[in-house]
Length: 484
Ligand code: ATP
Ligand code: MG
Ligand code: MG
Ligand code: MG
Image 1 (cartoon, rainbow, N blue to C red):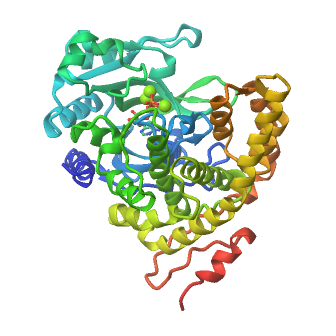
Image 2 (cartoon, rainbow, N blue to C red):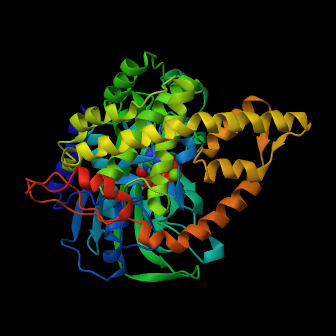
Image 3 (cartoon, protein in one colour):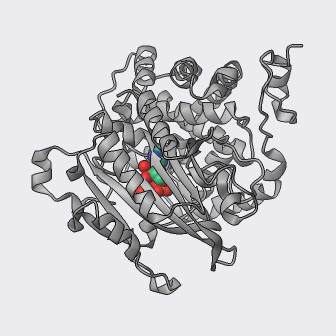
């Protein structure tokens, strides 16, 4: 099954169960002071849970573009180093707004995975919330009982608050959840170690694929929980992970979601992807094909790279990609922008914004590459100098102020400084760096509001301009002004 078919089957299944299929919301949020990007499928429905707005239908399903690079859900450091966390990914989801609850949500998920997609039952594990005394939350016995009807009890695992109580952010709708994990190891490996021990344990072939959240609380800003006006279902399944499971692969990057992009990077760089976990070149290729998606979708949805707020997050992702390819793929000239056409070809049909904004996305990435490549050499020289100084001083830790300056002023990715330092047996002061980072965040929070660009939907076919009107985007506006 191709990834396109897998996505479509999900939507068709839930449509057949009375769900209204809606498009993904933009990846960039414009009206939410608590969140910069959609980090899960439920983000766009927050107001429904809170009772602020009436949902269009009581059953909805979709695929949502998500970005997990900031705030409560930040996977950036894992991306490239593992095979199943991305910055941008699609989250397939079905919702019930005050309609069905745990019983049907569990039955739907089980039927879809085992009967429609045909995943063998003996490859699946499920978890339920074990309760939490500090918040007076009980064990989820209902979920346990519903699971018991379809899966043997020794495959139902108790999970703690970290894994089985889902929260969107520091505040907002939340609730206990039940997750489905798939074991993709060979029979030989399974015989050695039981999958039970590997669930939620960072094993690359025993991964969480679907989270069924039983939405019934709202976490208030003061940290307390209140009941929501009604009970809802909110589920999220990682599309790329599902493709890995259904295409018989052991890495998301080996699915057809990523292989065309990887092939293009191979062609442009002359380097071969071998899928090794610790190999620097392979990490760099994973980083590049992951980050190009995040950056392209963000720009297509109206978020240009910039120096503050959400724009800075996007700029940093792009710079991380450029740095990895510069160091480990020997790519000293702009080339990431050439991947946009591949992405468009592959995903533009389902996500037309990629088609509509393709020229803009390509141009913005190219010009970002050009300008960062002019400074990257300086950054690398500075890191090198810092390392020499540190060694000369018989110290083991790079000076925090300079490390932070590299990151903040020169836009040099901190994880790269870390990697280079580690290569020489040195470290950075993580605590000190975090403090400096938090101080910087406080400073940028104050002015982030006016730095987030508005998202504009284009309906008109004769338009090839995105409607930004912020000063920083001016160069792009003149290039892509509306065709009258
Ligand atoms: P994990 O424990 O693997 O980090 P999670 O518990 O943080 O995942 P949820 O918030 O439950 O993830 O999101 C629902 C689903 O989205 C997950 O079951 C997973 O399939 C998928 N998912 C989560 N984070 C990512 C990511 N960074 N990249 C790709 N898929 C993801
Ligand atoms: Mg996570
Ligand atoms: Mg998890
Ligand atoms: Mg989860």
